[in-house]
Image 1 (tube, rainbow, N blue to C red):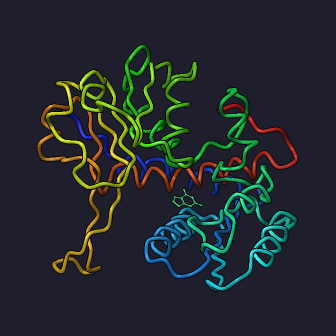
Image 2 (cartoon, rainbow, N blue to C red):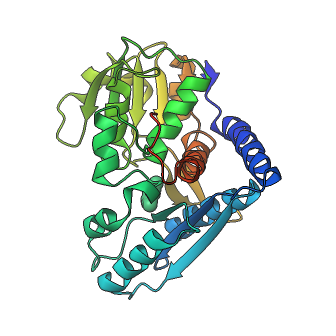
Length: 297
Ligand code: GUN
């Protein structure tokens, strides 16, 4: 069994990005600028956005956090998005989800200029992804693909079961794994809350991606020997022994499942760090391609 170490892989990618920034600086070129918009004070979102902004600063990107009140109106948020679309210093920006209930997430997503949509959530980017055309890929699936690429995990012809059909993770991951690319070329089953006999499916899977946010959901009896398991779950559970007061749990019963696997991601230190570097890779790409067409992924 080999650990797919997202932490060390992300560090390697960060070093590459750092070099790219230094190179640009030495030539007197602009450095990438990512803006993260956070509405309200959701604990998880505060942590994730904070980590994204900090990671950008560490590799020499410019990054700005725009923290708005929970009570901001949809119109005001749309105005903020428009301002960022027009700001020539901003290469890419994200609006952290979820948004407060009185704001329509779809409207906000649609308002973001696809060329600055480094989350890859705009329908233009998602549509281009399906067609294997140039686009920004959503960060979490892109991070998993990068991890598979760097560990040279064989995916062609394999049966991949993705559990969870969220717009952010499960659905795009199912598309990326099925595309005629490497990694990719897998035969994909997308399982969700209405799926019957999930265990029958996962037992046939060479690759399992679990993205439902239910701790210890995937148990050893659901996994065949030699499977590759990618765990996207990051559920916060109270833990007084931790400084933060909580610990993060994945969807996978790691202790029992890991010995059966050929490759597995841990939580924390697996998919999470890769998500952040994907966002930074997208931001660098957004800057390099300004006024240009996006290059193919
Ligand atoms: N909420 C959970 N994951 C994400 C993400 O990747 N991007 C944004 N904008 N919001 C999120």
